Image 1 (cartoon, rainbow, N blue to C red):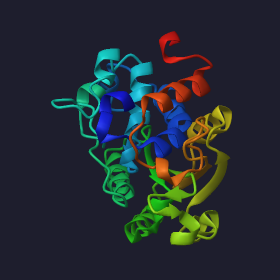
Image 2 (image 1 turned 180 degrees about the vertical axis):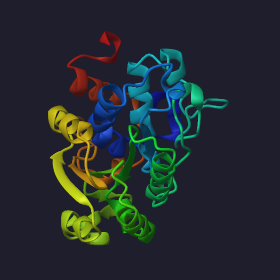
Image 3 (image 1 turned 135 degrees about the vertical axis):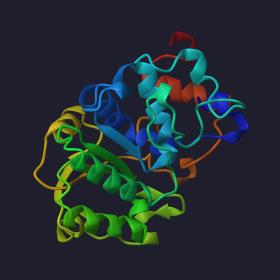
Image 4 (image 1 turned 45 degrees about the horizontal axis):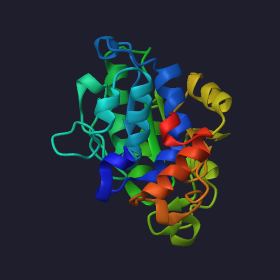
Length: 257
């Protein structure tokens, strides 16, 4: 996808920090299939942190929903794989998103609607970034979720500690996210966001109140020159860097994939 995007670049850091979370959510918890959107009992996912959408495309490719050729159209003219999520039933993308701070409000409304339809089997998952939690609208939505006791709502915070402008704690200290969400009436969990088992246990469990999973992650995880480097929030990748990235992720060069 990065090579297809060319000069347009890609959001590398935040995509790699959330990839395990998305893989577990889509493949183990929600169990995405071609018939998924026809099942009213399905779970819903809202990628509030919309710039991490390449992680979703990669996982949908793993599920057989997006083809090899489609991946190569990422951010190209007439593509369906945009730089932020765009509603697309064929690709199992139910919500357009990416305006940071808005996704949790959408999640609250969706969760309320499902409960009013007496659809108690379905849950709503909202993926946020920790920098996104600077937005006041996140906390307005959090208060609403507690007020309406939305036990079908799960927020996952990709806490990679870096946002566009740099270190989140330098730009706007969030202090203890866990204490903050607890004070807003939420059940809180803290996990290693790169640990598949911890992700699966946290996402699969059903809770009695709105729950936030604080996933501790590394921005640019798995590629040495990207890890914890704010320059790779969004950037173009050279061929030399691409070759090194392939080797580090897979132990072989691109031609061996």
